Length: 338
Ligand code: NAD
Ligand code: LMR
Image (cartoon, rainbow, N blue to C red):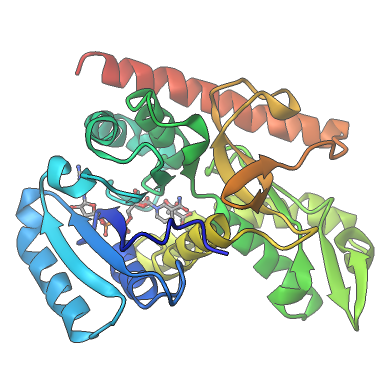
């Protein structure tokens, strides 16, 4: 069942709505692919003033798709208009990185977007609003957003690591020449950055109808501990090097997967990865936005507990935590003078 209250249209805001991810995302959302075929939608499109013309074109295209669930589309450059009474907020608007940059190189420019948007969220959004931050550096932007919207429950803040999660599944599936549907329970720990820890130790694969640990099926611990980890860590950079633009189609698909699972829940015995405000689980600093394995039921996200952590994993989990603490301190400095 959906977690929508069934009381009329769901109000969604997409920031960065004139950008390339939004262009791949909007049809999937507006066609009912995320919140279900029974859920009417009102879509607010926020971008900066110079993009209002482009946004008009996006509005025309949504209209031209003639989608029955869409009850209104409102392009705006005002956070007050965009965030008023919203149920779902997808924070995509931010500068993307270029070739040769790390995502944290965007920090000083992008975290400054998230302080005023957090303040606007606090003032205008519903307190039940579900929030997903995509703009990079996603974890730290989410941290700044949450700091500036203290009356919204902490569990409503998430950041996107589903793209990394899907990349990890894709790598294992193609290595074993099986469908991605047959790969379950990979984990992305930590930061959506090149320090993230893509972990296949709990992953299983279904080969010829038999559920097998990925480590047993692959029979190649060396690949799982080295190439697999670094391919997933560096995949965003590889896409930028090839496309000269950052990922958009796969990012939009991951946003849809993240929100659909939040809305409708994960399957029994299956988990996914989401960046969450840490409650201290697995010894991670409370309050950091850290990606964990999660299960979702009735709209409630729970961190999968009691997974075995060996020394190799602990080291990788701590390394990505360390980077997040540094990013947090830099972000607090960058936003303290605003
Ligand atoms: P893009 O440049 O095509 O679009 C970004 C849009 O945001 C632009 O239209 C821009 O005008 C708008 N924008 C900038 N400042 C804004 C503000 N203050 N308020 C509202 N809108 C604003 O970029 P894109 O390719 O769509 O990527 C968007 C962000 O998502 C980037 O930061 C990118 O690095 C990030 N990203 C994250 C993931 C992830 O997995 N977490 C994946 C892909 C991309
Ligand atoms: C990605 O993972 O593709 C995005 O975060 C874009 C980037 O900068 O890598």
